[in-house]
Length: 312
Image (cartoon, rainbow, N blue to C red; front, side, top):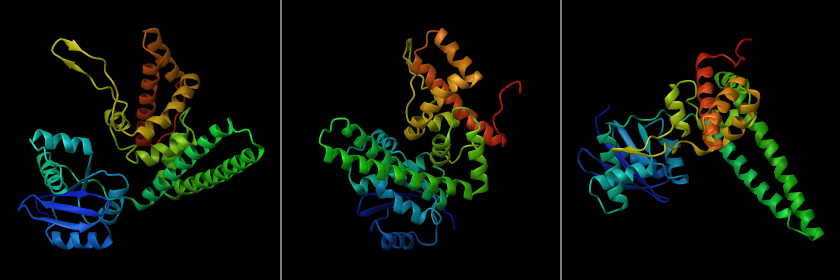
């Protein structure tokens, strides 16, 4: 039975501190499978409208994966939760207080639960994260090789670079196979790859970091990517609009495609050159192209059609 109640969960490395808003009940459970089962038992048969928790990197992932199909989970930005607590006049920051504030936050804004985690999507994301870590390791070794002079040290560094390259290739192959496992994901991948500038890695990043692609409106797609300009003004003062928030990894992945698009996509090239002639800095113009790319990707996936050049 669903109830209009909010549960706040403060997640740390070892514990889950829970607060039930309706009766002020609190409890603490291990951040482990035994604790997840105990939490479910504590909640009882009356399922709350939302179970609110902060994104805490590796600490929340086991909790989210274990309970996303059992409970209406609502994940919130830690900064937003903290600002809410400050607005409520709370200066104390303990796990118990944080759990209570999360429950109040969810209730005040009637937060809607997220869709249950797609386990296959989660596995692809884990592979992609491992790929990113290997790229950083390889880049670090390549940079180090430039300053090494001893033959033995250089041979060992080169061997490790070659090993990382092989591992990266294996990971990318596995990611590609998994992207093709799901017909809808495979179709979306083909559509994204049809857009000039968006290659294998950029398409995979979009599908992994923004699985909602094709279901969003234009502004929401830009906002989730962190490419929607935020207006800053107060009275007669007008500040410069800037981008913020969103998925940084997705923005990073769109940078090179944007560089390619301004050279090989006539529409993007026209837009870019127009902004440059208006006196816009190159960085601002390129950011606008990145936004147009993600909006175009969302539109094409939604329409289930590949990119074609205008007039062809």
